[in-house]
Structure formats: C-alpha cells, structure tokens
View 1 (cartoon, rainbow, N blue to C red):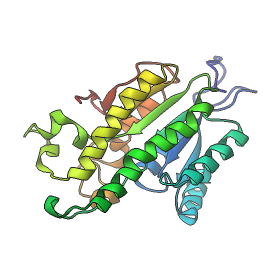
View 2 (cartoon, rainbow, N blue to C red; view 1 turned 90 degrees about the vertical axis):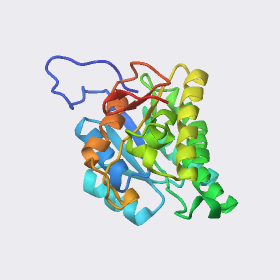
View 3 (spheres, rainbow, N blue to C red; view 1 turned 180 degrees about the horizontal axis):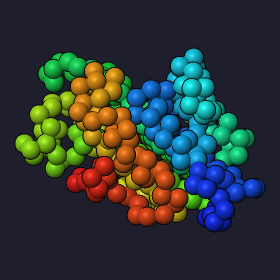
View 4 (cartoon, rainbow, N blue to C red; view 1 turned 180 degrees about the vertical axis):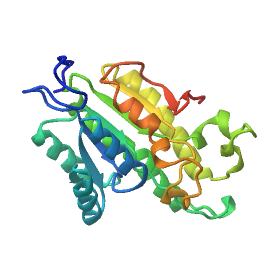
Length: 250
C-alpha cells in the first residue's frame, strides 16, 4: 500500500525503498483522455494499469507509455471480475479512474431506440457500477484509496441550461443523461464509502476522437481535473464535481 513517507533525500516521483508506488487503473485508456491521463500519472510516479477492451491496442498503448495492461470490458461482469483478480494478485490498487465511455447513437432524439439507450447506459453507467463493486474491496486495502469518475459538463443541469456554456448548444439525450447519472453515482458512492475519496471530473470540451477533434482544449488541459483528483494521495473532499477551473455546478 502507499504511505506518506517522503524523506528529504527522495526526489519527486521517486519511491522510497520498500514502499510501493501508487497503483492506478484507468479504464478505456488506450487513447484520448485515458491515454494522456496515464502518461501524466506515470510521470508523477504512479504505477499505471491500462484497461482496454482491445488487447492489441491496449498492449501497444501500455508498451508506449511504460504502463501495464489488463484486458477490461466494463460491459462484461466476467471481464471486470478477471481484471480485479489480476490486480489483486499483482499487489492491489490505490486509485480507480472510471474513464471508459461512449457517445452512442447520433440519431435525432425522435429516432432513438431502447437498444440505443441500453448501449450507452451499459457502458457509461452500469459499467461504472460494475467497476465500483468489483474494485472497492481492493481499494479498502489501500492506505490512500480514491475513485475518479470521468463525467461531463454535458451532464450538469446548470451548464446545459446556461446559454453562456457550450453544453447548452448540444442535444444528446442519452449521453448527457448518462453523465448526470455518473455524477449522482459519485455522490451516492461517496456517502456509501466514506473511507474512499470518490469524486467526479469534467474534462471540458477537449479535442479527441470522441468529438472528431472539434474540442477547443488540448488533451493535457482536458486531463487536468482528472489528474488533480488522482494525485491527492487519499486526501481532500469526497463527493465533489470539478473541472480544471475548480468545483463545478451539478
């Protein structure tokens, strides 16, 4: 488990002899925000596990970054359970970053189907529940446990109703509502597990494959809030929703 040992002769990012580095698992981390988060946390001294559905892409990303790879499909109970077993056998987990998510159908609202809804919610919402249930036992063994749920300002009622925010210009019933659910799950899990720091991060409108690289932020800017929450060392508030500017409105 991680400790607070920080002797003066140990440089930032170095690990004291006999002390395990902070171990972090990131879902959907073979590209985009997940990949950049992994890069930055490795730079900060974390041991990072890249979780990805595609073994070839995940293995390649892990090799590029100097991370570890675990095959992980958040829509599969069996895959999530197997990943939890892998990390347990490897020594445990300190930080879980629930980053995996999909936009889903681009059909007009009137043409969305129940199948479209199930697909989005199975990854973005039910997947988060699967991950939390499977990894809380490991996190409870850490001295500085944390969960970071990657949500979106598009799930913020305040932002989508404010014409000054770009989120108000987008109509995407399934994705936006799934992110509102992620933020509420964050609050509820924070109440249920007070021994774990559980918070939500809004990356903001970031240029990634997710939006056809139309975002105005770089991936580094988009990961600022995620990295901030992942590097608090088990300290700070729980049940909050932040972006790179600070606490954000629900």
